[in-house]
Image (tube, rainbow, N blue to C red; front, side, top):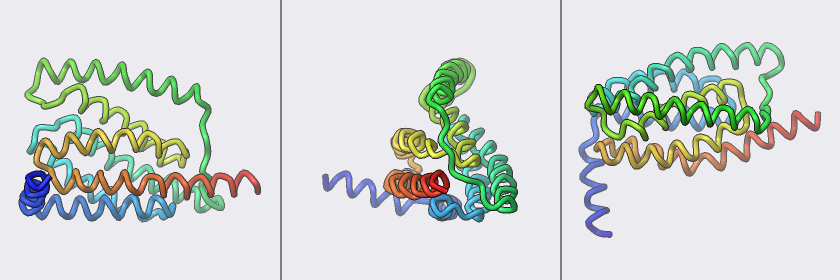
Length: 202
């Protein structure tokens, strides 16, 4: 236990300023998203811009590509939520199970395909797990932008897996960030559930 804590301290001391900025804005994004505050998307845009460079540097190419997508989704999310504000607010919604089942099946197929490509033609580490978390996060981010309640369950699985990946690649602050995400997810789920029920009752 003491050895593990010492390793954690050493990794935290070795973080880069760029990673620190990315982590701080990543936390700000989630806190604001829980509150359904549109400025979460501005924080997301800057944080993902930082992470593109970080992930290329540690050869997590699917994660780098994912953050290019995140950047685009930050722009989409901003416009989607802003349009919703003009229409008395974009409501939290629940999507039918069949839509999620189809999405998960598609995610598994695309992960197998991109994982195979990365394994064969690149020096990527964890090509299949990296692919799975990437495709899952693409779907989950779209759900956030549309204010679909189930997004929080996807993020719980994604963030737990991502913690392990980032720690193994010496992105210690980012691993801690995803640990914070895991702790905040229940708060987001409860908050959005209340919002959904309030809208449904109205």
